Image 1: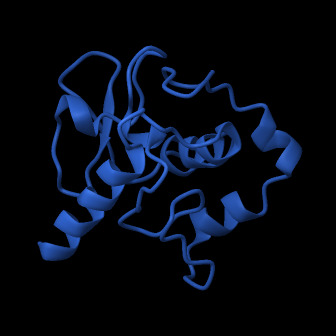
Image 2: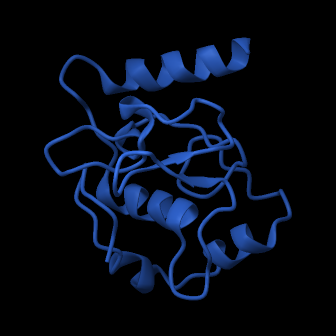
Image 3: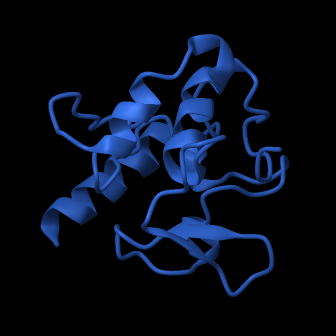
Length: 130
């Protein structure tokens, strides 16, 4: 519980007073880690929100709340926008990413062509990629 509180505090601090956001290439990688792409399925912990079109992470146990939605409209700050953000399963794009963990889905993401990642359509704070 304490480590989750520290992680949340770090994420909030990274946002700062001016709503700092992660760069687009990192967000694209985070989106793939959560939502999948082509032959890579969505994360098994991805959950559909009670709010239409929203998703949250079921692994972090934070629940379905407005501030835990992974992606929102481009005008709103979403969870994947935080400069410092940990993933409960250590996936690519997150600050606690661990390349040494063995996971087939993680290895598929790691082997993606960087050019393919560039085509994931996101803006900082955008809705689901096409």
